[in-house]
Length: 368
Figure 1 (cartoon, rainbow, N blue to C red):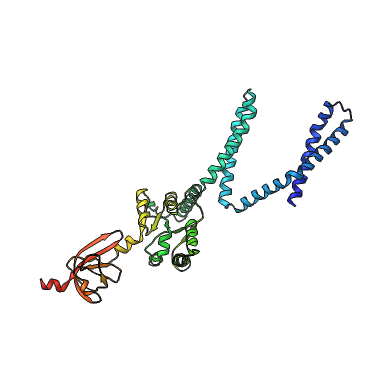
Figure 2: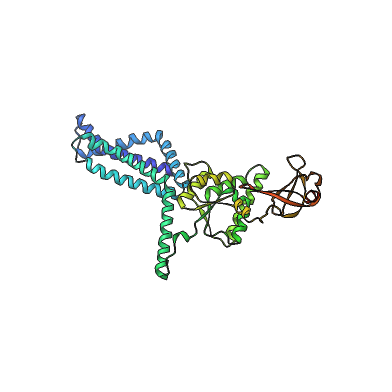
């Protein structure tokens, strides 16, 4: 059907060109027919010539149109919308500039240059609208939120709230979703504000869940289960951010960029991402830091009962663990492996990776 339409369009175009210009060719050749006969003959001849050409070029035109159609259908709505807006703005600017150039008497400037200006500004406008769509969407989102808040304030006539007290969006990365503790934190209402799940994080989770490696596949599926729990079972507002930063390849870099655009907070347990956010002045919440902060405080000199499980790196050291997973290094504890003993805390080492407690058997203290 499309092929027939293209052929018909080409034939009509050929007839129109022949009707307009072939009679002039007849005049140059001293062919003295009546004007209407020349016009009809020109239209028929032009339509016939382009009709013969359709057998050669129509397939290429149809393939090109189908490629354009498939590209437009697959493109996200936001890309088409902001790309079209940018194209329209570029063409409007080109039109205004070309009106000024038309007043010039230089033929090249007034007739040829406007074509290049129109193409150039139209292309630049489309590219700016297409590639900066995420920033435009964020500005529209912030503007709508401000309008909604101002309307609510006017209707309720309530006291204005300090913007610093309004909870910022919490942007989750892949590691903290797979970890799973974020669901428990949300369930206890310790995390305020809207939880944002970027589309590119969902795609990374799906890629992990489809991995051929069994361990990765289980981690990815666990992450998807956590997201379903956040969205359906927990008292937290979850939003999906549909935008993407196609010029950025790394997911962590996209998260930092999104946090800057939305003025949000990145939630992670990735040590490297934590450092990158701090370097770029992006607020970050580290689940591991929270876990370390809520662990029971242990002071040097305290006594506790632990089970020595294995030997340590150094000679005669034994290793045990508290219920919360904190590792305890017991000096001279190798001979107590498999036994539960009383120990005395000698020092506590706190790092971003966790907390480590050093102790010695209480029996050695008594012997001294």
